[in-house]
Image (cartoon, helix red, strand yellow):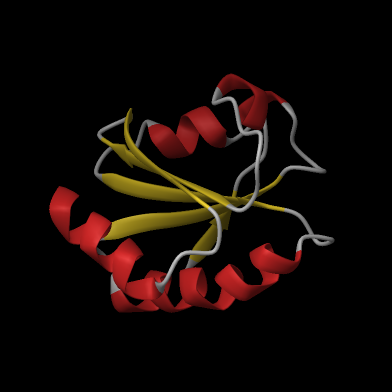
Length: 104
């Protein structure tokens, strides 16, 4: 299941620990629309092993600003609340899976 990240719930999601991926996106972003189904698939494939969340940059401003999100889509990878990796652009699913497996 994909969690929706807001400025008010981000720290709570992050505090749960484990591996978490946050997809920063917007409705008007073409590459974001290409990446979104991949992120949804990963949420199903890695259910119970990681938290998958999406942050609409048009609806939340504090979290994208805190992590210097300048281009979307951007995926941030957190392990036990710490930022461990970042991927910018519409990357292939295999690249994302490799990053996930690196931190599991």
